Amino acid sequence: MAGEKPHSIAQTRNDGRLSAPSAARNIAPILDAIKPFVPAGGVALEIASGTGEHAVAFAEAFPDTIWQPTDIDAERLISIDAWRARTGALNMRVAQVLDATAPSWRTGPFEMAVTVNLMHLIGPSAAQAVVNGVARNLLPGGFWFLYGPFRTQGLFRSESDQAFHASLIAHDPSIGYKDLEQVEAWADEAGLKRAALVEMPANNLALVMQQAEG
Image 1 (spheres, helix red, strand yellow):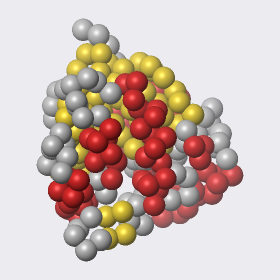
Image 2 (tube, rainbow, N blue to C red):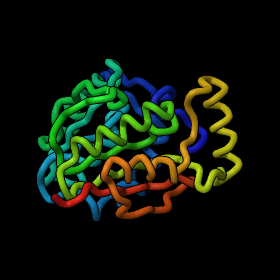
Image 3 (tube, rainbow, N blue to C red):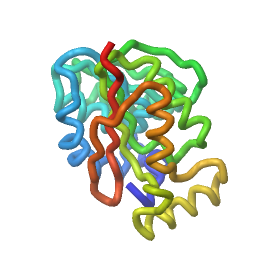
Image 4 (cartoon, one colour):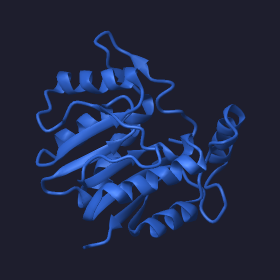
């Protein structure tokens, strides 16, 4: 959600679980938006799973799909597995270390990819590496559900988005909001085509891209 850094403000519970207010707010609309694209079976890879709250919600909502959470931060990996243990999700795998900004990462292949609130927290070259990596690992016909805040046609979608972007680049000038059109251009170059663009609460967007069939 615009105005928040989803992982940095996470609160720690006694059993190792982290909890982020943004995750609690956005999970219901994300579940509604993602439903048409979740495969009936197969594996869905979540990139930058953060606290793990989305991963367990996906596993509960879509029990026929195997969910593979990932992150690069040790504390978050512990949190993801703690949420898994707490809920007893049998269709959710143990969290794996994955740096999706690495230039040639491979894991899978998988039927779906999900990324929530990542692109504005990394730089352009890292964001393009994420796009290329998803395209490289996604099976033909598979979907990538990419959620978060974006600029559209070079413009911020609200004053709060502009303020959040300013706070991000004040902390790290290399990060900040990406233009939706740029992300789609990277995706198109990598072989992914837009399947849907869903308006989400708080001026966020869900961009759904699909790997070419065969």
